[in-house]
Image 1: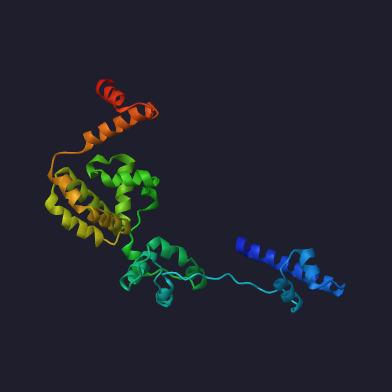
Image 2: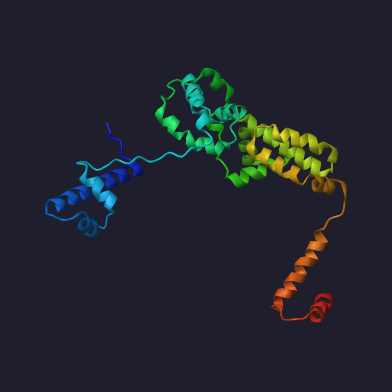
Length: 275
């Protein structure tokens, strides 16, 4: 049986423990030779407090890494209980504690429950009910996974425009996750609202996005609500400030070309008559 290799943190702790032991032995040796505390501090470049602490003990002190408080602390007992009951789905646990008042993101919770996965007993047998909920395609029909950028583009395309291997991959993606199905439906609805200027459907879409359980969509919807009047105006009116912004950029470029040394009359001539 192979021995478990120490982690980098464990190796660091062992190195520091040996270093403190060597310092303690050196402090005691110098003290026995008649060195004063001040002389020991100057020789070993240590503080008086540390030298006195080493002289008062026969073993070096052990230091423990302080654990910072997090938003997840009030929910640890509940997470341990659910883990013991057999719930191993991180997204499901996050949704449950979010209803209890947890305001952190799923990614933040996932990083912290790594210690829970290591400390608590693992599930030996898979839950049959859970196994029935996830329908994975046979190995013979699986296709290579695409990158995150490529997958994101599939969500904004119409299903009829996706062909070949991408179509098979996307079908499998939607089949194994209800969140992906919900995400694709909401993305397609948003494209339809913008493309067909259906301003009356925007409020209902924002409500669906915030209640979808998808963090990214919820944040996106909250961002739109902060400038909701401008978003609705873009769906109602045909005018755009694009040409104005284009002229502003052109004016700034001409000013930079002259390094700020020309007066207004020359700048006016260049703006009006430059190609």
